[in-house]
Length: 302
Image: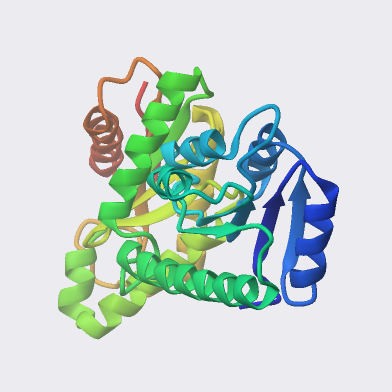
């Protein structure tokens, strides 16, 4: 954990930055920012595991930086340690109320700073592991339904508030899966879903893309910054690659396919979208159309 942990030190005095860098750089990946605004810009590019933050800075004080980090879903979980010359109990209370996990007064004791940094990083690592478990479907390793809805809501709010690029959604259903389960058994059914999930994972091209198990044999692909045409191509590629797995699914009545296939419905979310439920309904209707048209194909809601 130590060598990979990324710490951001924020202070407008180079002497303080050099002192903390010398103290921590042998154990952690330490980066620096000389102002509050520079710190926020750096966090937007790459999230640190821990921030050591001064309070008294000219452009934006540490309290404001901490409050802004706490107000954003993407950065609220980053622990912040204030390291400051402000030594009164009122200032310490203010710092902790702003969301900091610790408050250290300068001049600091190097041994104590090392110990507290180590403890806060260990605690964050444990929290991250628990959060990952809570967000993951146990069978497939994809995101679970609960986390999917959290991300969908966050993406919808981002599109509305920031006039951001619309995003696309793909709903995918394994064709004739009940027949497969009944004929092959539930163990084989679970393995089939895991192999389908593997194809979906391989389609994760951008850091913000997310593949989730929507329920049963149904999956969902959340594709931020992706338009309808590109999402349709991704869905077509997924269908083709599931076919290429050649998982036998013989004796399906009235179906020329003798392997496991999937059908997909694609929909686009814009700022005018009423709700996440509306988006899912549109993707589900497109999926129903694909099923009704013979399965093993993609339909787009327009």
